[in-house]
Each structure stands twice: as C-alpha cells, then as structure tokens.
Image 1: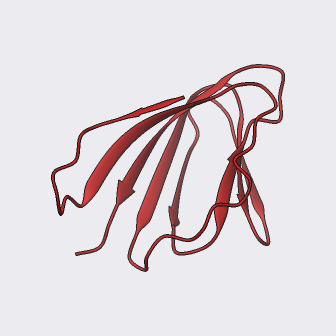
Image 2 (image 1 turned 135 degrees about the horizontal axis):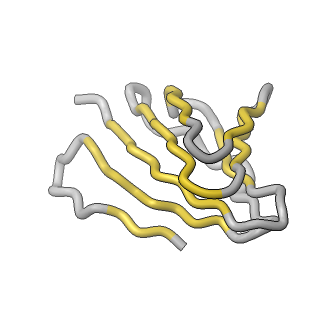
Image 3 (image 1 turned 135 degrees about the vertical axis):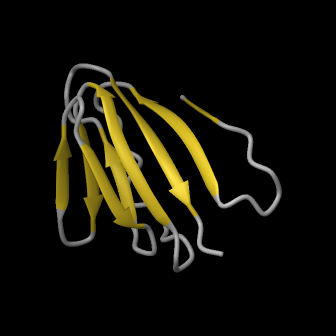
Length: 92
C-alpha cells in the first residue's frame, strides 16, 4: 500500500508513503533515469534497501539518500509491518 502527493506535469519532487507488510519484498526494481535521487525515512518497523552489490538496514528514524539510477528494491524481512516516507527528486 502506498499513497503519494499529487505531482504537476513536469514536477521534480514527489513525496510517497509506503507500507510494507511483514515478509514482503519488491525485488530489484529498474533504475530511474540519471539525475534521479531518493531519500528514505523509516517511520515504523525495519526496512532493507537492496542494491545489486549491497544492502542497507534501516530502523525507525533512520534515513538513506541514494542516486536512483541503479537497480534497487525494498524488503521487510521481519514479522512486523514497516512504513517509510520516500522523496523522489528528478533532475531538471
């Protein structure tokens, strides 16, 4: 489940709240266009941000910034729900 702010055509920034139930993974998602950035802030539970070569483990209050021009995914590997905000910023 996710909800997001409405974005005007050509908008550069989007705010999304994602909810991942226990044991759910998106798998690796395709890279965004070059110049796209993502900022993640976990509100509840634990989130694993997966890249081809590495993983980042985040808990409540943790944040992660990354350039989204690489394959990446999100996983909740626990028995508790996970929620996080994501800001997507697209290059001009």
